Length: 207
Image 1 (cartoon, rainbow, N blue to C red):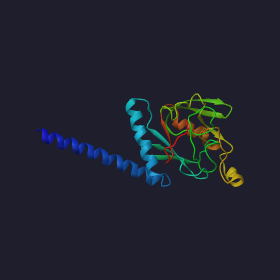
Image 2: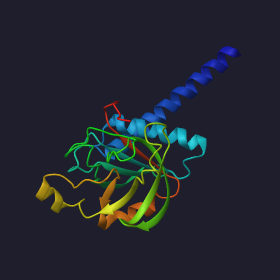
Image 3: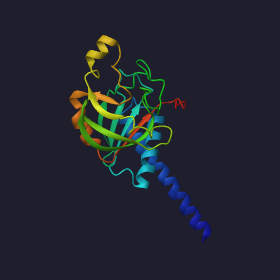
Image 4: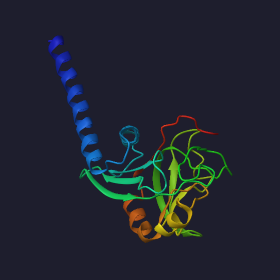
């Protein structure tokens, strides 16, 4: 009997692993530019935050900072439907790098982007227009996001014109800024309890 239970448990774990791999594979087919390691880490964080009750909506946004700012590196997925909703450019902090982000921080005044998992909160209209509050969930990595006013907002420097003139997007003070034309709709799609995960292959994070 014990042996049979052990076999059933092993099969359940195996089936769960296969389903997770199938989910990742299907998502990567829709977003082939997205690094597999970025998606894997983002899904793992989403699953943990969902189990804790922090993630309340089946929506996952992934920023792949291994890609240059000229590329579409923000990917928004509807996990319930297994569908890619948005593939967009996103700016990084001015002290994080030029076209490619290489440095990240959780410190006040760093003007750098932060990595890791954020839970989206409510919206407001401020100096940067319609904006989305982000709550960092990882101590010493991004938990100063609210104190640093790291939010998602639209920006004129996220545009084809900026790329043409500068050879890259303009840069923020650490916020994941997106193009003005899509900002309101995208923010409304991910606000109030979804997960945004910012990834980079480097494990070095300035603090």
